[in-house]
Image (cartoon, rainbow, N blue to C red):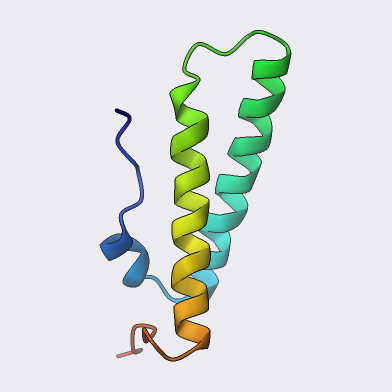
Length: 76
């Protein structure tokens, strides 16, 4: 099983802007992985699943912050 690069604890420590940056990076990586898979050039197909789960984790944390279930880190 592939290990996720982003854990929920790490994502929870990020502010909203950093979370959006991570989301953009993950979406770009997923696009590139899908493109490589379609071209038959990918060796690690499990990485697609990992990136999809990272994206879902980011969306979940962002939504929980919207609903005030989870709070963003405070600025010191």
